[in-house]
Image (cartoon, rainbow, N blue to C red; front, side, top):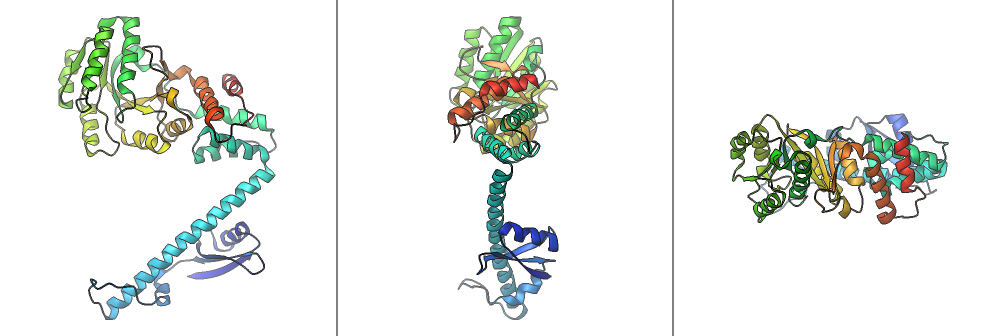
Length: 390
């Protein structure tokens, strides 16, 4: 193990020395300010925990701990010492790299103000940090702020995965899956009403297998009665295959499913039974735009099935930012099939394949209305025009 000290005027310069002289795998052991106002960083390469055992005294013990002697006691003391050292090293590295990030951000604002301003606007847009960095680093350093914004927002729009067609327009079997309360039943009602208007009430059927949520059966039955569309209730997912066989003549079948918590142990079995019920069945993950970024990513990752076709983005009218949902779709590469904004049936649903400019324009509108800093000079109209021009 090789330990070296690196002195520099700033943490950033010290870390650059570490990387240059010891390589990217060096481990930061210590970071402290020197008397002259500089920084000293201690780093190690070829880290060997065994060489550090001798540096530590006896490990703490309790009355309940068994008595150990000889080699066992020495090993226990050494392991405790190494654990303490590794914990301190982790904390120190976190502090150092936080300082480096702050210095880098400050330096970026000084050297490339247009790019720094873009990053602040993308943060207000609600985008994920990795996506912000990707969008910002592709911009020309000497470009003016308006040009940087137009280029970045166009690239962002083009990254949003959209299903290229309206899946329900051509018919099929679609099950709507997702957490409780994300708008699965409302979405089904909008799509069923639209299809009935275009192709007749006899062309569509609804299946309700949500027997867990109180009132779910009644809600879908009332919706079916209002639309003059039959609703087939089933008590278990095992009945779905036979029910679908009875509805083979229907052009479109929409299935309402129970809402599950993303880590519910029953979810995996349910998804397996669902995708096994019919070869033509496709699942649409329903995602609420007003949910937190963590909840959206969790839902997209857990509600995965081999039959998953795309996602439905609901409750746009209740969201204060579209950035988290759009970032989640980009990071998981899950295409958006439909967007829902409002409660009107069937008006407040539209296919996403021709709605790219509208989605990004809405995201920018929400940025101006709810962003931490509403002073951005980038107008919504400019975002939409940029996307139309791209």
